[in-house]
Amino acid sequence: MGKLLSEKTKKVFLGPLNKNNPITVQVLGICSALAVTAELKPALVMGISVTIIVAFSNVIISLLRNTIPNSIRIIVQLVVVAALVTVVSEILKAFAYDVSVQLSVYIGLIITNCILMGRLEAFAMANKPWASFIDGLGNGFGYAWILVVIAFFRELFGSGSLFGFPIIPEKLYEWGYINNGLMILPPMALILVACIIWIQRSRNKELQEK
Amino acid sequence: MNVLKKYIDKIKPNFEKGGKFEKLHSVFEGFESFLFVPNTTSKKYGAHIHDAIDSKRTMTAVIIGLVPALLFGMYNVGHQHFIAIGETVNLWQTFAFGLLSVLPIMVVSYVVGLGIEFIFAQIKGHEIQEGFLVTGFLIPLIVPVDTPLWMIAIATAFAVIFAKEVFGGTGMNIFNVAIVTRVFLFFAYPTAMSGDTVWVRTKSALGYAGGEQINGFTGATPLGQIGTAEGTMAQITDTLGNPIGFWDGFLGLIPGSIGETSTLAILLGAVVLLITGVASWKTMFSVFAGGAFMGFIFNLSGFNAVANFPWYMHLVFGGFAFGAVFMATDPVTSARTETGKWIYGFLVGIIAILIRVLNPGYPEGMMLSILLMNAFAPLIDFYVVDANIKRRMKRAQLNK
Image 1 (cartoon, rainbow over the protein chains, first blue to last red):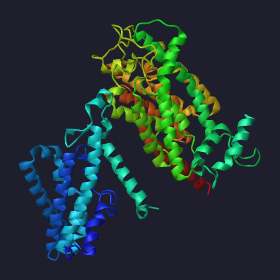
Image 2 (image 1 turned 90 degrees about the vertical axis):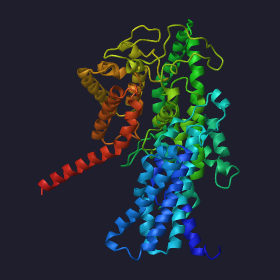
Image 3 (image 1 turned 30 degrees about the horizontal axis):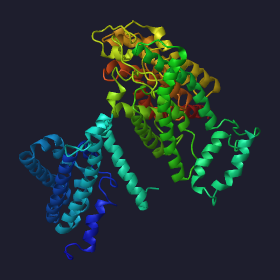
Image 4 (image 1 turned 60 degrees about the vertical axis):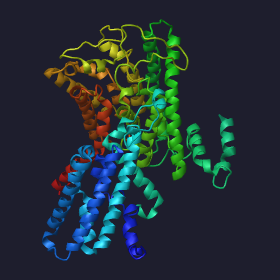
């Protein structure tokens, strides 16, 4: 493995997980982060789907990068992404129908996810397939972990459950505890993203804007 | 007073840099400036602004203005309670029940809010800011009496952190902190903040009184009643089903959030705010004007029960008066230019009535309307200032 994950590749992989996170630092893909994080399950599926699509579209574009004419590169990128999105969407419909219903248009909208176009333009067009694959995985995971963390808190406090299983004991409800309805509403996802950004920046001073 | 001052001066070195309790310096400073006027006001001569009033004095004026609404609110809580359980008691027992019901809410609101304020002051190395004095007083007045204390604690913490501290603390907030608390409660725990069972307490207050609800009692607020009424005309009633009108709303012996029911008590507070110059009469007046105007327009169309609710009734029922006097005039979050205050207030009034009439889900529109206009206040100010610059620029060029 030593050769596969050289210092540079490691950086490519770990960067997006923390200091170059697509959501909290580059502030991309916020829309879907608000839309699919009311529960843990769709958030996880969304995270995995985006990871797969970013990684493979990165590889494909990277392989094609020397043959794509510069003037039509966006169209080529879109075609590749759209093909992969369709594949993922069909697989979800076949094997996880209720989740795909829950995610509704957001799987289709991965095409317009800024993270994808960003990685293709910024990385895959200029790097070799293996590095592009690692970069795609890194960004996908960077996106996915934020989604999962937000969904964890939203589902736990908003519905009192995790992955649909009730977590908050019945006893607490008898004592008068009520689930927080605001957690289910999209604004709370934004506030949770803000909290993650807050914690991240107070731990990494170099991320703070002057 | 002198003894206290001497004592404070004596223990002061302990809290300064290098002292024993250095870590608590912001707490100490907070208490010191709470007890005594800071000795840094400017001299009474010279060409500078030398008003001796600081933000603490401003806050105190608002607190004094809120006292009538609080006292009346406490009385009304007791009054509604004893009607609901069908007992007749004297004035002091009524008031005592209200006191015991409202006091815990106030304690929770202050402990949580000031606690967070102290922690942030400590982290940032600032002085403790006085802003929460008023917010902590407002919160108990704008919630239903039966709101569980833990909800108040969470909502207060949320509002102080996300509506105030992240923007930079007192004086920097875009949104009114007390209203954010109320909105958080409203959206997070709708079952505890609306309906007809939360406004009147039937259980005991810290073990005092309490009992079974009598037959024929209904705890819906007047606005709740017309909001859910069928047809285009509705008669509002008190909790026992007797019809009520304008003067009942003005006096305020009706169910509602603790401090909002009595327009009379609120107007007493308004007098205090206007005399001390803390609140702007322009904002206050234009909120009422906007509400009356919009109410009147809806009266003309009259397509549902709320639209048919006479415009003057809109002004005395629900949180309209309270919002107009204490919330819309908040000097931090409202418009600051003089023309801006007219526009801002008028729109607050209009939007409040719009929400009441057009959205059956929200019988009360005041908090949402003020919050919305809070967001627009800087924009209004910007264009007022801009228009002024343009006007004067034109004049300057004409004279050339």
